[in-house]
Length: 73
Length: 197
Image (cartoon, rainbow over all chains, first blue to last red; front, side):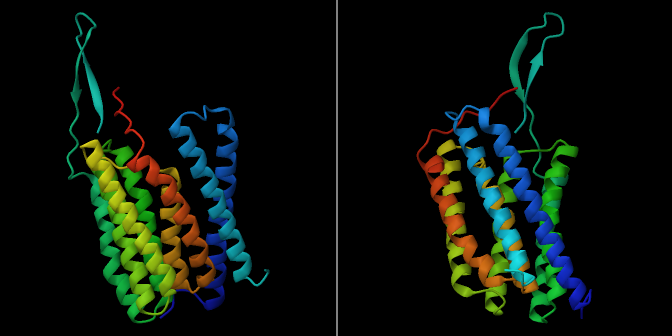
């Protein structure tokens, strides 16, 4: 009992995962860049910057995963 | 919990801050609680091998997670309890889904066990943090927010059979690093004083 054909589902997964991962990477990269002048002695700022780096890593993992799923890597 | 100041209209002086109490029975918490409704059909879909339906249901569960924050802003009903309830709902929903996926062979068992152990450690540390603060407070971690979103995706990767081993094994070391990072702030560092407006 499927909603989409296998081919359409494959592309749906690639677009959703790849799109979210790429946007996530770029968004956290820009956030990290914007926070470069913030006071790094502030624990909240350090926590935010660590979060942005983690977000970029997750985005990268997502993009690589999509490329593997599509047989590119 | 929002705190407002009462201003004397005649003198313009600020009196003692008046606490605004937010009922736990609010629209945002209702949206959070509604996420549990996706779990029985999710179990049904996995049990019957309907991968696409299972994927759709976990997407709905994830979208409701985004919607509760929006509801809290629209209805102005943000509260410490709501944040804690949201975090516990994340743990319960994604934990349940991961266990079911592993039980049906849709997800690798070892990384799922490690993810759940790390998740439990995180929940325990949050309780310890709330106990140290002596109030219902959710520890704000930007990295953990991101890894929780990734956890939702983990379930989706299992139900959709999408590079399952790769995504699960990439997740485990990342979550371990975040937990070590957050442990110091939750268990050792001084607790920030709540902001008053």
